[in-house]
Length: 301
Image (cartoon, rainbow, N blue to C red; front, side):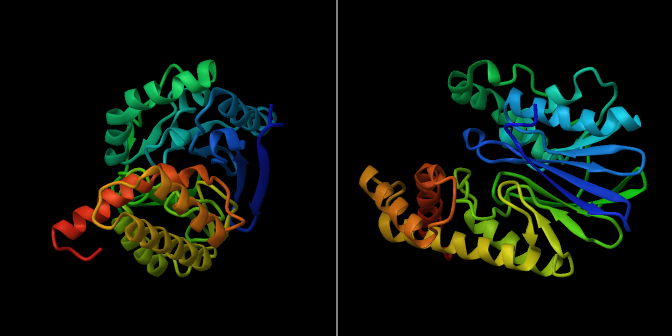
């Protein structure tokens, strides 16, 4: 069942945890989901979008849990895009009392958009689109921590950034790793459709300061990497995207079809190794509207 997803493992034996990482196929946006294995339990971070991908995550969990009897202590959702929460019902099927942990803002985002996402994507994915969605039922506030099987999970609630509400999670007292959802992509074109790129840049600049001592950053899309360079690359990408959208759109709130094709060519030339190029045109109107609105209010772009 794992065969269609890519698997990687990152071990921290001196700190008592292992990060198991699965990556979905291009069809479901090369999304990452994680299982954090500790001495006596497992915690999931994000759960994929499609039934088939979530079943691969279930198979990975079973391969860890069945020989050892380790329970699933909880599921953490980093933000309210369905490729990160849709698979929750599949993962916890047959399990009892598994808390789904996130912020109130992310819960509201899912609740307010889940029907629209169903209408948009169900016709495309058919039976691979989950029928049942499970909302987070345990909420964490900004700056709080949970200790699960002896491992500390420290949460930062960033509000709107890549999505309408984003969490990051730093693990352990030594802060060896951080999970940032889609606030940082790695060698992937970013998802701009929510139209918060100005705030996203502000969050990234704050992340660069707060996470300066964290060695490894795990993304929502793309391989993990050194924290500071990945954040710097994401800032540069957003600035480049915004610059070219602004230049093409002028004062307009949207780009023409021809302008979107031009934008895609520019971004693909600037980032020839990046995947998910379909995101380039999809997010252009949201960013054009965002920049024009700032300009009309006399705010800096």
